[in-house]
Length: 496
Image (tube, rainbow, N blue to C red; front, side, top):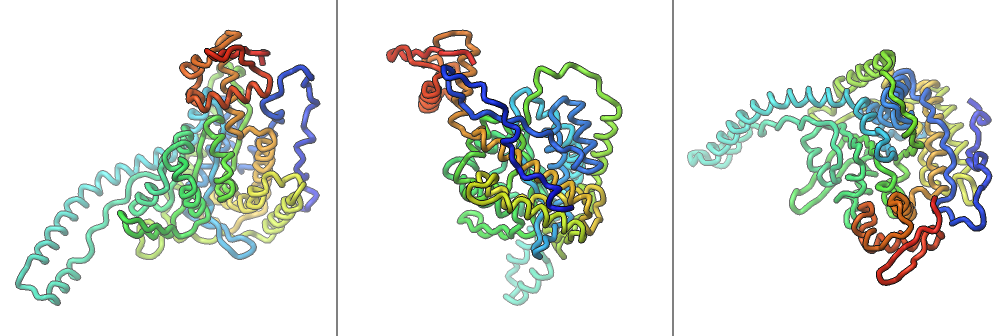
């Protein structure tokens, strides 16, 4: 693959002519350019057929289905291998994915289709756990009783007691918790549970607002959580020292993440300068497809689509069930093998690296998303490794076809990030203002009181501070005007 095979990113080429007139209210957002169609075929034979089948069956944009199947593939693949980068360092095959879709866009239904192999695996683990915990309870009780007996034996001197305790051995290990996914753990809760949980886990939820707006991401914990998740994405050893829990040192852990979030709930997370400066957002791949609600006339499920979903499920389930490469004597510490690039794949990756680097720097096209752009080649390498593992869990080398597909996907994610950034769709202030304006239009009234906003408007703007800010934004943009101060009344200047 030569450098000219990549087209420099310039989404201004797709910008339609402005239709704004001088007497119109100012748009709340810069115009959102149309998204390029998600390159589903680049997901490889198994995942591409599944993503398209789920999109057809549930009637969602292909990007939503693609994120779900890629997340499942990452969860399975990350346990088996790391990718060996050309500069000699290894990187996990873990992906952090975020899907933005509104209520009613069927993101939960699409995710349920993709997650069934995970649910089946977790059911099997639970059945094994229920049997193992009974035996463990008996063994642990017997061990505790024997230890107490040794400690209470006054006939034993110090060395004799030590000999007896050595002969008794360690306490029987509790069976690992029977889950491989969790919806919204805090970083502290995750690390605490990970001492006795499987080594490869996923944070998967169709209600991602609970994660982005939960305890772990509040103002007091946001920086700590972001740093922790970034370290896990990097594959670093996890070290925690806490007064109550003591010292935790966890090696060989892997974490995939997929949050499906409504845009207004995601805005504060994806636009947070602290999270960007810390580096977490550069580790996240986001899609925000245009809703197709209103175009989804009922259609029967195609047997071909169901077959594709079943084939994908069988393949990913086999990866989840495959024996894990564990460190000697460890139950939940991974020691993944290295996936190297083939010579052809390495040329493709380096060409992509240079293609992106040439668009970085002050004043250049990718400068607004320079943090993500600086890591996008690594994202591509991770995706390539996942695609290779999906087709053969024992593969030892990433081929040219997987790398070509991976850089195609990475280039699309980069352009999607730039599209959203340029349209300010991640500005929480503007999102709340748009939410208020839509609600005001929905009331059917020309004049709305401020007290009605506090009582009846969407929850995100019922606090006075939030309502004041949203009203001020709408007034500044010319969409509403205050007609009275006491009581406050707002008139819609123009329907949008």
